[in-house]
Amino acid sequence: MEAPPPPPDVRPDTSPDVGVDSPVTCGQLSLPCCDGTVCNDPQTRCTMTGAGQTTCTACGQAGGACCMDNSCSDGGCCNTRTNTCIGANAACPAGLGGGTCSAGACVFNGVACGALGDPCCDNGQGLNPVCTAGGLGCAASAGGETCQTCGGLDEPCCGTGAATARTCSAMNLICQQSGGGGGAGATYTCQSCGASGDPCCPLQICNAGLRCTAGFGGGTTCQ
Image (cartoon, rainbow, N blue to C red):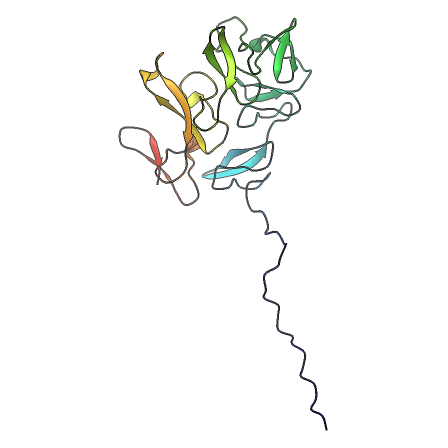
């Protein structure tokens, strides 16, 4: 008599799934910011939503917050004074010189301001001149203050005033002042933040597992 066949192998399959994506746990809309500072979804920004907690929130839409690099979607303009997006073809406020938003610039009587290479927007009443297209900042040029690229690593900070009032294009960058004591000779550059030994990022955020501590002689450091 022949021996009976062996029983089937019913052990669970423990081999790794090939081609199956791991669940996304950070960096997308409504999820925590990765490392406490980074959002990967387009048109989201890292926002402080609680004590020590950051979340990726929507940005760039008309009437909503500008994204981290002061950009707005679909040709909109960022009113950097209120951090609010103006929709394309909508009216720019008087504080930006009036006119209509078009391709990131405010256009009044055929004259544009706020986009790359344009004059900075100013209502002529002494307000700080600003840019309305993403990733740009006011900088001196031969023709006066014009909108130039800003906000990236080692690039000039976007905006005007003190370093704390200027912005960079991502939450893992911070505006740092060097030289000039805050006067005309000062320069403001976007530098890395959040890693061990780095300055704390805006809102005193550090990468996961680190905390923001006050440094000797002023400033803060992630440890």
